[in-house]
Length: 118
Image (cartoon, rainbow, N blue to C red; front, top):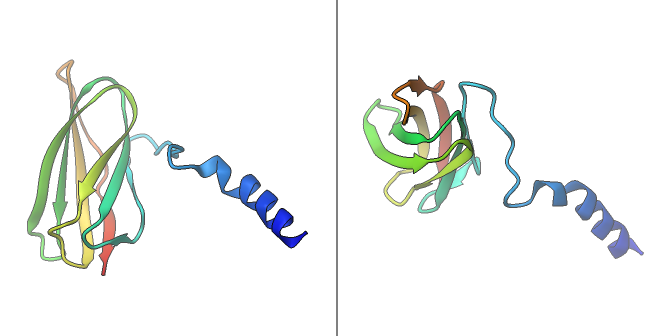
């Protein structure tokens, strides 16, 4: 009986938030998950694109050193870019997402943070 109740609880609470279910970030913002991220793993940065274009993600360590800079081609809508943490030490990182749309317009999202742990 307890296993059945636990199973139903998991279906009701966890199932709606499966691996492909992402929350839509507020306009002009992004978020990252998992938090904290494990060193050597991956962190996903989620944002919304108004139309197709190129996304540039920059990450800085606590000393303001640029530690990551990559670009990604994306279509319109809710998007996610995976960041490989293979070379990042445990710590707090500030990241910026800058979008260059194919139409020529640009958008700079609010800075956000992710944390890397051992």
